[in-house]
Image 1: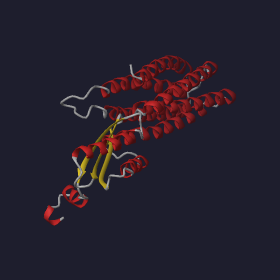
Image 2: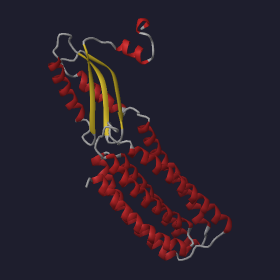
Image 3: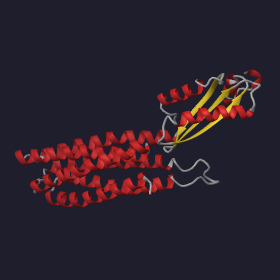
Image 4: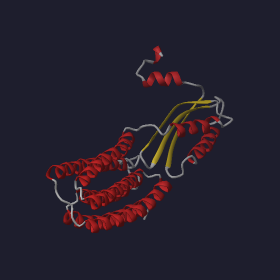
Length: 303
């Protein structure tokens, strides 16, 4: 089993345990903040299970129908996850406003406080584990999961603070105010997850720093005259790179391949957490203007 799939299973189990405990105390105490945390944990469970199947699907071998693999399933999962997080944020805001209007009393504060302390400790350990897996694999789904649980860690801390304040002051409105703030924060944190997933689906280029390093690896080879039309993208698991390599016209095809093999090997070392699919094109001269004209739909005679 891959580290990514193992991470989603562990996250699902932890989220399920937290959901059961929080729901029991949230319903019994009437705390909208604890109930909001329980709903968030329930969504965590659903999302982590969904992420497991998304990663499993993305790791399937290339087929004749899916010749570039199914890596973008992870980006779809990230968009769905971010959307669900956003909706949960709106629901928490709704519950907070309703409690502020109705003035519902918060009870069983001591058990609620103990549950949130337990939740913070468990979530902290889970975040550390997921961040470690995300760092090793650079997997967008695990990164999204780690960000989500990191958000939970912060919101759990805020909820604990609100419960302590209610315990000390008997002002139930504090629970509603903090619940409203947590809802806003959850919506804000989901934006980054959705954005990254959409960018991958739209084939955005790799980070400018990585692109500069790729260009450097190409240009530093002594037998390369120049390069042009460098294009990059990622599906979350693979980095795709295409470029035109300008070499001496008299060079043999065998020598050209040897040069590109060296360049490809150097590029792949820039990020060993992802697979690289590198496609060079060999040119005997710099035909960048012709390529640009062809791409833009300009007849060759007018280029």
